[in-house]
Length: 184
Image (cartoon, rainbow, N blue to C red; front, side, top):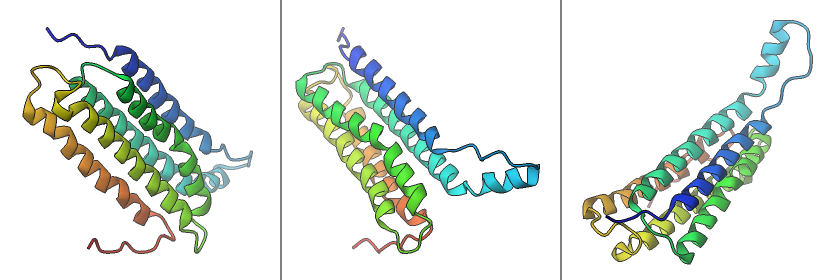
């Protein structure tokens, strides 16, 4: 049997994912004490961009956690390079709360596109880190199970390619963002 050696890496990674997803909620503020439900409702609705960014980033980090879990169902061993690639991926994931907060602050201001670019760019770099980690581990079954199914080995690359494209789309969904340019 091909013994799995990735338990510590997976546990550490799960902890970082949990911290990053939890930090997102810090951007949501309880409105100041106001009388009446109508005033409170208005104050809550004024945070709709913050709430939308929270849900979007929460879902994206959740999807990244699922993809990480899927990759490590195939990866059986670690080495120093894989540990470094995983740390780079975790660096990007734990960074997500910052561009999320940046986006909620600047996305609603006219002419402010840099925040959306930083937000999207964070996910593009994260997707690159995911692909680097997987391609390193899967190259010639370097760190995979000895009897890994070749079809299953190719599948995560397709998932990450789809994720790469999806991570670039949210930029156009934010108010004040320029229209998407056609892919050429």
